[in-house]
Image (cartoon, rainbow, N blue to C red):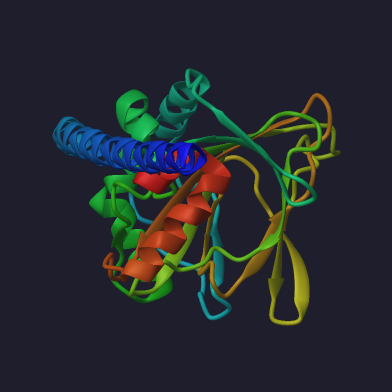
Length: 279
């Protein structure tokens, strides 16, 4: 009888512990969702301030008279930014210290700065991303009206750092987590290394049709591609080299399903850590 009572007591303690753990997890989840919601309201206000300040500043300059074909779902536009805009953006990115390093064995190694950090610390970068002139150029290239992806998507606008030996990313698609079409836009800001042309060994490779191509990525070239149609990679950088790339994503419809939203969060953990689950 005494043994039975002891077992019953232990069982009750386990039940209380389980209930307590469940309550703690629930409270933590509510706190995280609430705090993230408050953060995004603050960042949305910050975006409005950045746009108001940048209005009429001509970040992009005159639109290129001739734009490349997008028939193969990839296009390159050289010298996309005016020199003063490029210098301003490079100067802002050089001050970023909140680089999140990620390492996925055999697939990815490098540093990333997320959109929310850029909203707080790199106003010219965010102003360029939100610029109607930029949206217009991308829309003309891809043949569809595009808009920025949502603020809570950490990959909407980010800066990628390849600066330690071996930094790279393997073959992959940029999967579409939205109902409309989804496009990736890259603008190399810094690319210096030991190659004969002064560039780094970190090469952007893309499979276009049956052909594997090296896509030129000197500073201030803009590469536009439909990420779920173009498989691509960046080869490893060498010691003493550096490559910094502004990465932006645009879509034709920013809505997504519950499944797409969950998949996007899981993907973002590879770049921005576990906090991406709460975006």
